Image (cartoon, rainbow, N blue to C red):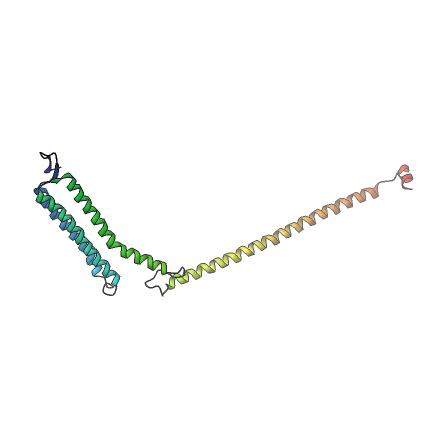
Length: 212
């Protein structure tokens, strides 16, 4: 927006860019920020106790440092070209900027691809019964204790459910037996009442004849 370059040449070519008063501070800012962020990331890793004994960590630090220098160089070259030419044809400016972005993406992929592949291989080597410890040959004792406790809890739950189901069946049988006994008692009581009524009823002369 400030100190920009944009005009048409006599042959109709569009020239765009920025003046040197803007590009020089931009180059300085780009270099300082990239170096600061890179060192802020790498120095704590270098100070780790396991750095000297971990080849993968060393490889990651080297790749990160090289990738940062490569992307910084590409960006600085792009800005320096704009500064020297004092404006570029539009097609050239867009082509160089897109090339810079593509190169940065490829470098980022190169830096991170080895770590992602190594991580996926280590995870595939782990068996379901092992914990995520420092080594694939050792298990975490706390994880084993938790797994054993969960197994006992599942077993106890199964036994409890089985015993509960058995008690429910026995209870149902007892309830059914009690119901059957109550029905039989009611039937016996009803039969006894009818028998008493029949025995206590006097017979008429017609009933005597029919009975005889």
